[in-house]
Amino acid sequence: MPRSLLLQQQSSVMGLPVHLQPNYIDWLLLQLQQQKGVHIVTLNAEMAMQAEQDEALATVIRKAELVIPDGAGVVFYLKLRGKAVQRCPGIELAEKLLMRSSELAPCPIFFYGGAPGVSEAAAIAWQKRAPGIAIAGTQNGYVTPADQPQLLQTLADLQPRIILVGLGVPRQEFWIAEHRHICPNAIWIGVGGSFDIWAGTKDRAPGWLRNNNLEWTYRLYQEPWRWRRMMALPQFAWRSLTYPH
Ligand code: UDP
Image (cartoon, rainbow, N blue to C red; front, side, top):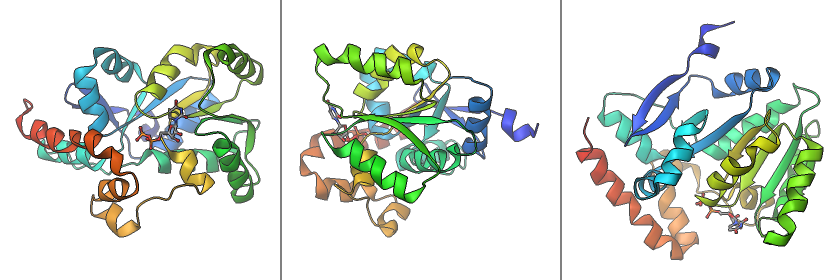
C-alpha cells in the first residue's frame, strides 16, 4: 500500500485537528473498501470560532476521522505557523467523492438537507452529470421531529455508503455525530449549502474571487443577512495572530 494512503498527518487550528493529506480521495476510497466509517468535517474560520464558544461542537470535530482545511482562514492560520497547506473546499471534495464512488459498486448515496425539492433537484443534476453513480434516496432538511424516525429507518434499510448532509453548521455536524451509528460503514460529510449549488438555486463565487480568498464577499453579496455570522472572520484573523504557536 502506498505510504501516502496510510499517512494522516495531523495539524491543529485553535486546538482543533486538521488532517493534512496529499490525496484525501484515495484515502476515503480505501476506508470505503475496508468498510470503515468516516465523519468528514470541513473546517473553516466560522466553524472554528463557533467551536471555541461551544465545547460540544469542538468535541464532535475532535472525534471526526477526517477534518479538512476548507476555508482560506484555516490555510492562513497554518501558513502563519510555517505549514504550506492547499485549501480543500468541502464541496469540491464531495464532488470528487461522488465522481469516484462508481469505482466501488455497489455504493449507494443519500442526500439529506436543503429546502423541499432542492436535494431531489441536486440528485437529478448529478445523475445527468455522472450516470454511473447510484443515488439511492434524498430527503429535504426540514423534517419534523415526528418524521425523523422514518428518515432514520430509511437510512437503516438503505445502508448508503456515502451520506451527504446539508443542514448548515453546526446542525449538520451534530446530526451526523448523533446518527452515524445507524450506518457505521458509511462516509458522512456535512456539505452546508452544496445541494443549493448543484440544484442551481444558488451559485458559487467566480473562480477569480475564490482564488483570491474572497469567496466570502460573494456570499455576503448573495446573502447579506450573513454579515453578523461573518463578523467571525476578522475575529478569526485576530485569533490566528494571537493564539499560542
Ligand atoms: N437547511 C436545512 N435545514 C435546516 C436549516 C438549513 O436543510 O433546518 C439547509 C438550507 O436550506 C441550506 C443549508 O442548510 O441548503 C445551509 O447552507 P449554508 O450555505 O448556510 O451552510 P453553512 O454556511 O452553514 O455551511
